[in-house]
Amino acid sequence: MAAGVIGFAVLLAGLGAVQAEDSCLPPDNVQNAELMESFSAMSSFPVGTTVSYTCRPGYRKIPGMPTDRTCGENLEWSQIETFCTARKCTHPGDLENGFVHVTDLTFGSAATFSCEKGYRLYGDKQITCVIKDKGVDWNGALPVCDHVVCEPPPSIANGRYTEADSYVYQSTVTYSCNDAQKGEDPFSLIGSPSIFCTADESSNGVWSGPPPQCKVVICENPEVEHGRKLTGSASHYFYGNSVMFECDPGYVLFGEDVITCQENSTWYPPIPTCRKVSGDSCSAPSISHGEVVPLKSVYSRGESAQIRCSPHCAFPDGGTEVTVTCQGQNTWSSEPNCACGPVPSGSSPVISHGRIIEGKKPAYSVGDSITIECYVGYTLHGAARIEYIGEDRWSPEVPVCKLSAYIIAIICVIVALLLFLAAFWIFKIFISREGKSDSTPHTAKYTSCKA
Image (cartoon, rainbow, N blue to C red; front, side, top):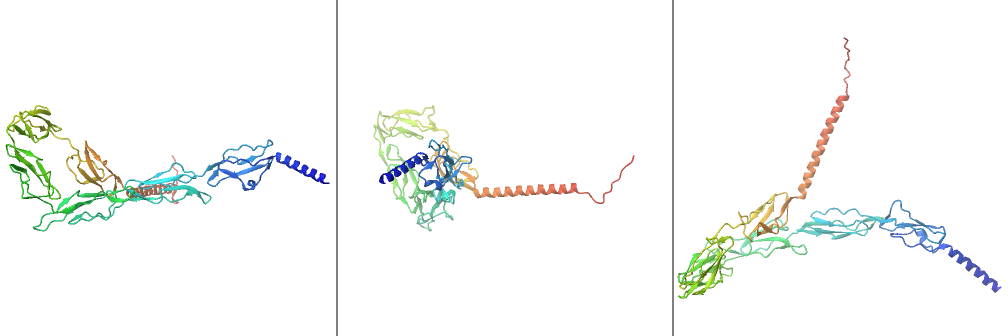
């Protein structure tokens, strides 16, 4: 009896083995797709079984591509090509005063945003194409690029600045000192008179530098023994005033011949001195529009120096360099002088739809700066304050004035309205003519003419 039971069990196992050998194993994965739920729980598939796939979320079926596979008699699944492709989000749109960086619109891709210089981003810097409502869409809204704005500029004692309703990027304010009361010394403006709104690395509005100061600066009257002033004769001097000295005959100048009153009420460079020249020496040769090499306060008899003319200058014979020798008694072998021609200089840049509001000159030297603004209805693209760097070049580059976005929108609306009115007028004329040609008066009489 027991032997019979064992035999029956072996027979069933054999039948199961045969059945398993006649079935396919679960099919392998298909890119971007998965088995339909009715097949996903099966562990074996008899020959002839057909299974179907469905696209994963974020993907859609490619029209015309098969989605079924069949278990063949060789117990292998039929081949199948990729039939699911990623869904695409619509383009996020244009960003006014900014840039949209997107290389792909498919599910999982990202769009990043940045603003033009002088504008700050408010909102998400990046959004991603994600699954949403059985489809795909961006997981965030388009951000906004708004003007970088500075806080009102700092106030200064004894002075004021040009005020405005707001201070956006590249806005410039200019400081000036208050007028002194009658009988009091005037205030001097110490530092740059203008500062402008700029942006830091985080696009926060900051001012280009500290404001100037207004204070009373008085330098005492400089006196040089055995010398005299060539310019700047006064009893006392204010900030920025300069004085030029020269020594009496037989004396040599030690120090700089031009000194300037500084903000701390001192002279810089220090006040020079005039020392008597010995019989066997010479003071530095006097030369305009040139330089002496090497430059010394006193030269010994027989010592030589070179005189070199400045650029665009030359001696009467056309040369630009000559050697002179000290002959003692403060006398040189020759005293040539340089004559200069006109020096090329920059001209005012042409600003279409704008103008120069500060610093305009007939010609410019290196270091001169100007401030530019656009006419009403135009927006400045670039720096408002630029500096001349020579050879008709400016730093930063000369800005341009472009028509404001809202003006462009108004023009588009007007053009569209005019086109609509023109089309309506033409349509009305056409209908009127059609009506006249089709109408025949009921009272018309027809007569025939007989020959």
